[in-house]
Image (tube, rainbow, N blue to C red; front, side, top):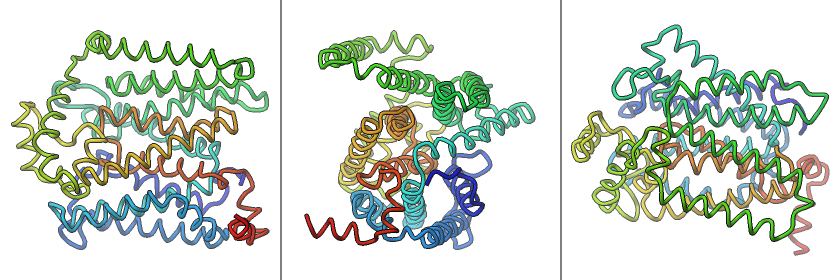
Length: 439
């Protein structure tokens, strides 16, 4: 399981296809709301490619003799399956059956593939995958900004001139840039600590990602950058000095952190003023209040159907008129509210349970292995939680972040997270059955 990620050609092709599909609707070259009204419409052609990717993963599971392990992993993550099933069934009460079915199938296929990625690759290999993904995104984004400025930058007020690269919106470019920046940062630190590794390439892309993030002019991206850097530095320092720490050190650190968090909450206007933003978060507060008061209560328990409501131009325009925005509202700009809109309180509770489980597992995994790389799955969860506060990254405009969440969850599933576990199981397939019988 320690092979380089792209040594196997077929694995590399599948990964490449999946990363494209996971980001497809977030790219400027593809519509945010693909037509799902006819069989040969863009939405169902996209689903066809997802199906091909799932078939490819099925072949890899069979070839590598991972079927039993894959099923075992799903048994230990049944809550995730429950959420996907709910998304599928929401098609029957959705505002648009075809749209919700398309979006739920996209979610299903992405989840099945992400589960394979989680059991097949280790955190260091996931870092390598995201390194190449980030490098390609940055190079393509910078190329399009300079080769076609009117395409690669925002062309409407008040965001005129901000970089958006290959994505539909600057906040998306900024969020992804902040994530891959942390990838380069982690790899650069690891390279410095290991004399046999060269971190020049990681350092170069780290600097390049800072440039892209700066010109995206996104406060969401800036805050993510600060939070992820704080996370990486704190974990790195903790690994270095943890053997010297006593319980009172943790108590004092927690008190200082909570005090700082409380001060920032009470002085949010001052904090946002640093980024030249108002306490309304560029009108987001008005949008959130409207959705919570007027729209979500209409279908409180089961939602409006997975991924359907924003596809209606009439709803987007009515929302814009209600909150007084100058431009059309396209998403809720909050991933948690999107889940409430789509699958209601029932789905939201299941979804939150999955997030809590993933955070707990990934944090435990980092503590167990005590390395910066081992904490990377938890960094993914930190990115997802913070990034979705002021933008929608929970399977709304893409499923890339969802793919990472599921991969992190399966990657850190107890027992399956041990190095060499797969090879041991293939050598002695009755081990799991014996353990279950003895217990």
